[in-house]
Length: 541
Image (cartoon, rainbow, N blue to C red; front, side, top):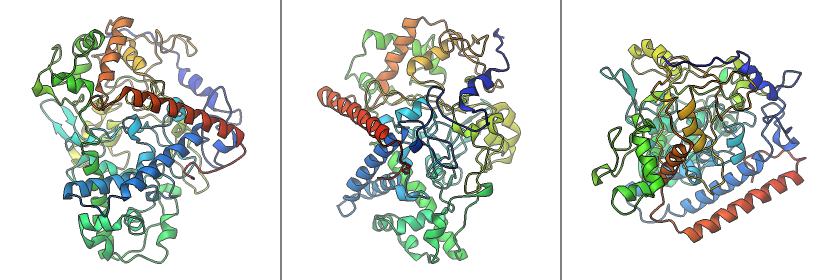
């Protein structure tokens, strides 16, 4: 058993202190700055300074992508391209949220590997605001890159482990639609802290009233056109969930309710079709080119690859296509997924900057996201299996296994883990975004077992770490790997070879894009500073 230096029990409160005013209310998401007027919703958690402009820019990019994709509707497309195009339109459609201001892609942008593209939020709240301003979910947006390759969740009795599913806690099992990705796509639209529609039928209604119903009918038939909508449908679909997380339900006949449910399944399957396309799952990284014999790894990247498969133990869960301890590769390994589709508890500290921990009071609609406040502990897969989250557990016998999976989170793919719009862009890592760079991630794996002796230890993230949020079922294969600082850097260098677009990248064009993005970011910050007295919704144009 590893020896661990114990941390003071007051660590969590000490970490939380910067976010709690003397009155007990949330005052800021940063210890060093109070929110400007435009970052605050009158009833919810405030946005940090700078986030508003970034979210607006993200949504401008979403609208431009949607407009460009809509041009394909009346062109000649194969059946495969039709359903993929439909799925893309759904992902970039902000009208599929309760206040028409947030798309799936608001939290999952291509430029960052289909995860969050706001540097300010990545650095602070980690979680992204929902359609109803002031509501935040409890985790970092997970990438959907290569997610369609996850199998339907199943339990392997020999390995005594679960494989497959989507979401950090595997609750999108895929057991009903036989597609974990499709069932994951059905989660955010009606999640009160995300896109927030009060009724799944509102997705069908908004599609009917939108710009691509004709393509939906071409792909799935006329079911969506057969639904008789009540006169107050738009009013109902624009009403956020209130007390108990329940919103108004559309008054539909049993036949129309069945049709709307069918459309909702078709909606999810369309998104899964796009997410499974070559656009998203490109297998076009430098590492893929290396395995195919079309590129050479540098000496640093190769050493990182060797450490990844050996001393670093990374390949234990993030399968690189070769047995742990092996090096090199062959053409047969040309598409390793860098995940084993299981789950693990890596012993991450609690991230007290996530707003969900403070959403314990009713907002103006009466909704309370997290009644227990700071006492909330994210048990991950264990919480799902226990039934505590309300998501259906396909096999009741799985529920007795819940304690063995407390604290475990789904092992994500490492493909595109370093994808970012420009080199200095800050991403957040792990389910709670506690780590802010690949260097921090590798250093954590390497040194996790040294626990800080003081809640104010200046060496946090350097030579020691806060205690885990969940100690049960902690992964013991990592934590004291004995890697040098140079070794850590080499592993990071290898991880950077997993970013798609290597074969098609143009260095001069990439450099120009990076400069433009930096200037856009600076302009947004200056504009927000000038207009700090406003209170514009984050999805406004």
